[in-house]
Image (cartoon, rainbow, N blue to C red):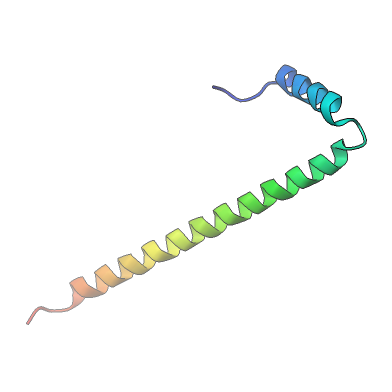
Length: 70
């Protein structure tokens, strides 16, 4: 499955206009945009947390390997 082309986007837009009508489309677009923005924010937060945890683990391993064994 590839990305959507111009023809597919136009077909989807026409079907959405038929189903929801032109008055409802801006509201739907707005809520869809907010949903995508929230998803991106959550994804970025998860990636940042993952990297912080991995960095903490690496520092912990480095500090343990630097300690001389008695």
